[in-house]
Image (cartoon, rainbow, N blue to C red; front, top):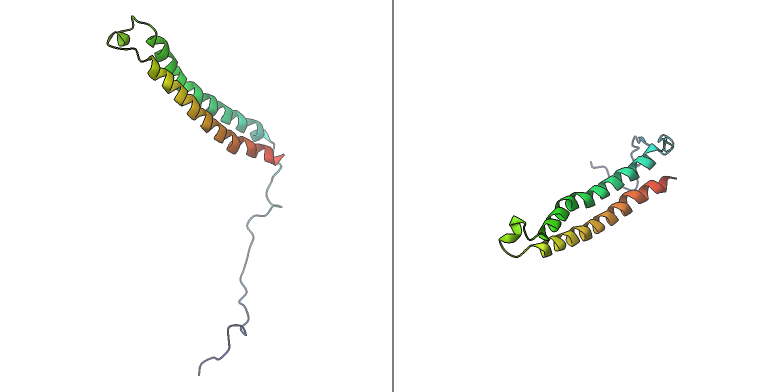
Length: 112
């Protein structure tokens, strides 16, 4: 014969549960060196993000003003191109730096 008990009448099965990490076991009070180190790393990356393209583009812009430059003797100087590229890079850098600073620098201040 089949067992005619309903699902609601059966006792629930007890499961073994174990908490692997709680707020009591986590050490939230550390030395705090990362609060000073992390913003410096983010700032260094932001400066590198601006500086590295400008290291290449500014000399090209300066050389485009010289009419005796061999690249300028073949045709019209590409001054407009270097100006547009510098403006484009600086605008993209501004967007990236704003996002990095909002995402990475704001979190370090939340743990005070």
